[in-house]
Image (cartoon, rainbow, N blue to C red):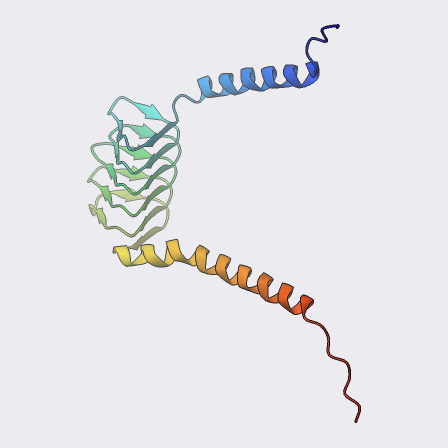
Length: 169
């Protein structure tokens, strides 16, 4: 019985190239910070591109070249902290201290925005406070999905229903 080696040499080569390229891209983007459950701290001498935090908090005292996004956590920009993109806090708070600078928009949904009057925001500021906003935001997709399922069920049942013969007059 002969040994055939690799059955898919082209596929294997493509997978290796993909892994090498993605590793190089990851090495180049190490200034991105993404965390689940662990707070992110950008110190006064630190720089980052995008900062994303789920179920944790972001503290910026340095520079963020992209966006700062927290879901289920808060964002604090203090000292001479700067964010070149947008600041978004969902189900959390945002605080902009005296010298804070945000070049994009600041959006807080389901939390509180505390902004020093001297903090600089170049874009729009939107704050939908309170956790009451979270219920419609989280429930709406399920309601829409339920309505689509009900429509499909109704259409299937309608298609299976035998048509009635015309009644002679």
